[in-house]
Length: 238
Image 1: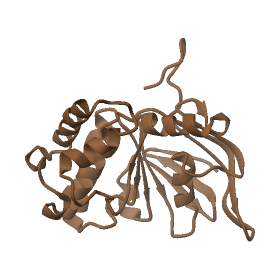
Image 2: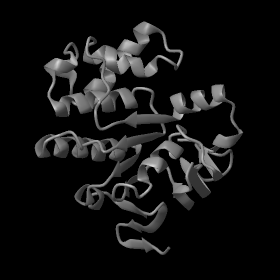
Image 3: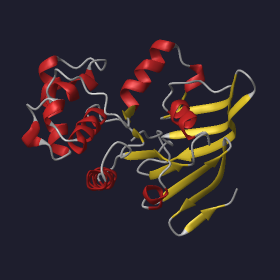
Image 4: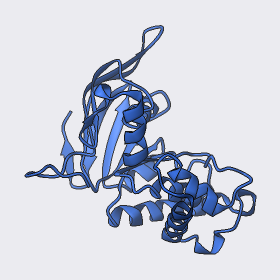
């Protein structure tokens, strides 16, 4: 958690007036305001083409907005050099994708340890932290297994461990159950709830209404804009 010297926690994400336009006049985002506080578990939900994937890229500093301000962990992303932006991404953000992106020839420990390649952690320490991260996602019995020896749900848990091993302030999970059967998807979502209860801030990008409704905050997108921001027991007007 990032703290100011004499105040409340700094938001993990703060977007103000964010727009994204692509060539041909395609407006993927239109004046988006969004604040994510430490410890939140939220869904960014909407149909294909609604702007949620662009939001993932902007929040994850993978793409720059056409207009507006993006702050991650209190840092104005637009004011950072490429080197500092890469360092910010490595230190503060963890990514989980639908299709795992694991190296086929490497076991679970090495796949997770690769999440620390750009963090300046010695190799022996990387593997130690990787084992601890795998224990955290209940895969201590699969440390030496390669992706081909793992189920889909286990592969996704390895990917989650890789995202967590650097102890990021924000975990961005893009359709984390999209390639899984129902039972495996349920296990992954239960794990995300457990990780959030332990203090990890998590943002799930999804088109799945059932998954979104299971989370305590739902930010709904349509046509590049937020149309509702609902917390359990509370509606934030738009």
